[in-house]
Length: 194
Image (cartoon, rainbow, N blue to C red):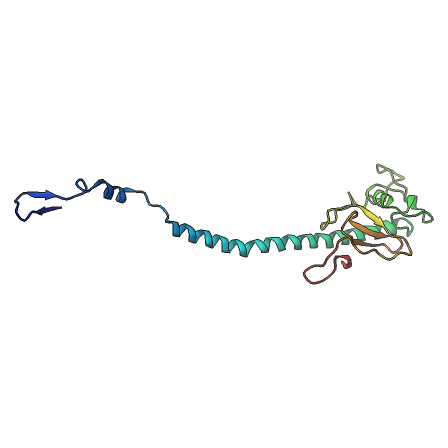
């Protein structure tokens, strides 16, 4: 752009070449976010995080509760199958002898290894040890991570769950098995009542 001076007849040039360097840099600088724009984005991300994160944590608890129900259903079914195939003797009694005290170790062995009709276990299937195994392994209680089985005696009531030492409480005479988990689900049902 050219302009004329009032007293002077010569033309003055006032384009980008004659502008001061500081104003030229301002126009040539790459675009960047302002501090306010960045702050708004951070606040929006924070709000979204407070909405989404609790949903993921409750989904995790719901998944564990569903896994607990499924594990108990499967354990109960396999205990019934074992009992049906072993002359109505539940798993846990050493060599299927009801006159001996049931043990957690015998329960695990009889449920995870092949056995004969009397409940004597072996390491591999054969013509004699043709029943089972009923479980590949005793599942871990999803709420406390423990796999151990505590045997409850005939005349004893089921113990109150502590969440420690064992994953499951099992009463051979009744075939009852419950989770050793304290607390309740979102509906108020105690885990021991699953």
